[in-house]
Length: 68
Image (cartoon, rainbow, N blue to C red; front, side, top):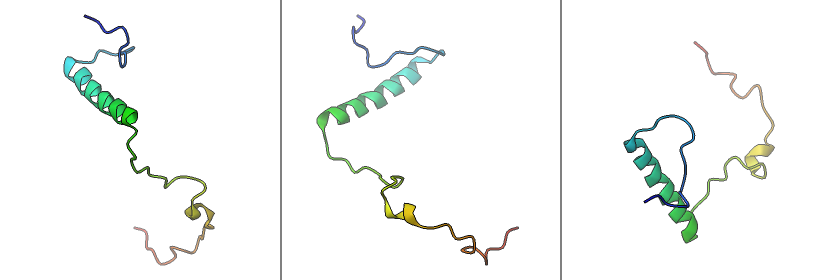
């Protein structure tokens, strides 16, 4: 029996049953975690508001590094 609301559909390519099973397992786990509302730690390293974005580039910072 086919589910009327599938988790995902394959629109291109020819995946094997094993590949579809692996993808289903990963997406099901992610969907369950999203529904549970668990407080997971997010990596916010790349956000513009972070202090490391305010540093000025220093071209002399690596003056003593020798390149091969």
